[in-house]
Image (cartoon, rainbow, N blue to C red; front, side):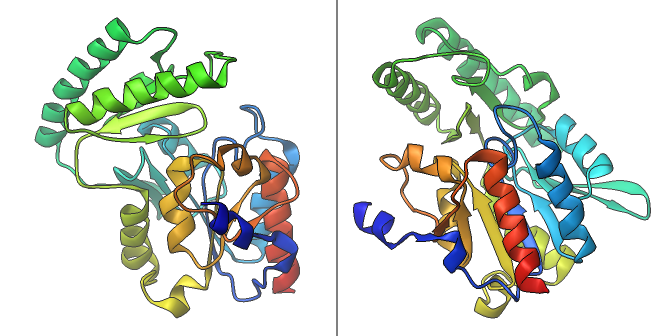
Length: 273
């Protein structure tokens, strides 16, 4: 991992004059301490003016994604770690789910059992406050509205929770705030590929198409995206997870959180001129 980190370059070294798509995580990549700054939100409109396609890729719930697809200047959104993508077409929200209703209900019963086990055996954590808006996964909060100051204790708790998910055969990913668990053969990367091909005729496995895209994120659950995209960027707080990342971004911003996102947007726009 240290060798990968040494190869990570500063954002100013990136050449992105062919970028037509930006895929990005939301929490702690686009947001700053849970808020969207004026500058970060304005950067979406600035990208849109340059006809850059804008696609958030998030672990956040279906309820939030419904709002984002409708209200934000985005072209689509991948949510709940790849369970679906939503987008507006002809002023109507179109929802593309990977699993059908019967499979989702069956999986949710199993997630309820996992939730009960976690809450009865792991101290200091709770179900994420956005859980009621979720359709496919279980989100456990360890750093959004819960504060665990000791890093060793936090890592121990994260390991306890991920082991419970895995014991039950569930997939799980650790973000900067939540641990998300789900049943089903999907993830952020594969749903992003499906969306790109189906809606934008963009084959992300093709090198030339891949080079038209930027992905930016901040935490361990973004590692597969960092590895896959030729132009992958971490906002600077990604370095807080340098001991946990399986794959590092190719580039890192000078600034953290939303300021880092603005840095990325400005770089894309400047290279597009």
